[in-house]
Image (cartoon, rainbow, N blue to C red; front, top):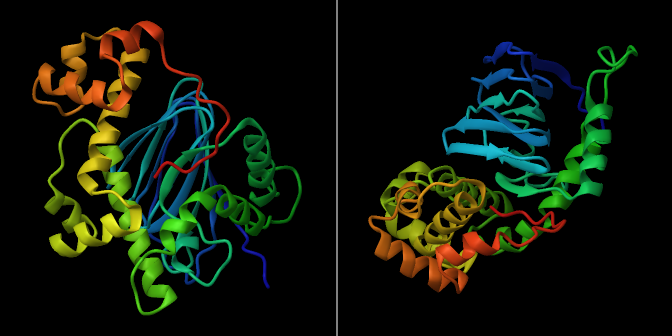
Length: 297
């Protein structure tokens, strides 16, 4: 098997870069980096994978807006066209693949990577950084040859192992069809996470992934074993819990910022989900997140 050689694109120290469509057939993967208030936009239809190494970054994509903290990763499908903005101390590393050659478009490949979001533990971050450096063009790292992206993709596929059981539940006559259905469902879950500030009609989700409303609702519930409305509520409550810990905003403002119409509905939903009131949750602080690398979307 031939190596998947990569080119390099780095936005650093406030620099703004845009990666457009290429006329080159079978364009190689691209190693990406955004650091110290750099801004990088992928305008081409390319699958992309991002991992936050230090500081923070914000990603704007077709699925919404995401905040990445150290160790968090996100994988976006070819229709996402993300723009990544790093904080003043941020370093976000990534890789992109052309639409036809992205890991999410090759269902027979053991190294396929699905759209989704999660967190790497400390050991996994070290491994990712080593593999990313190996995959980058060594011409920019002090040598004269290119790297191989396959080990990095295999590593991220292993990180996403928790998603495999959901992928296997997708309907479809062929493996390829089932894979395409799961990629679309994962985009819908990311859309819920990227719009945690509001209630999203299910028809809006169905249009995003080009499914009928009934097929989307039925398939989503069968694959993830919960209705999309339940997922949406859980995501908005998790966002509210994060705001309670990370900000001093009044609870009423947090309720509105999480898509709840009033304090009463928010308080009932929060207590039912977490078992304590929002006030007590803020007082006691968030529980330690631990070192789990579980894929959350």
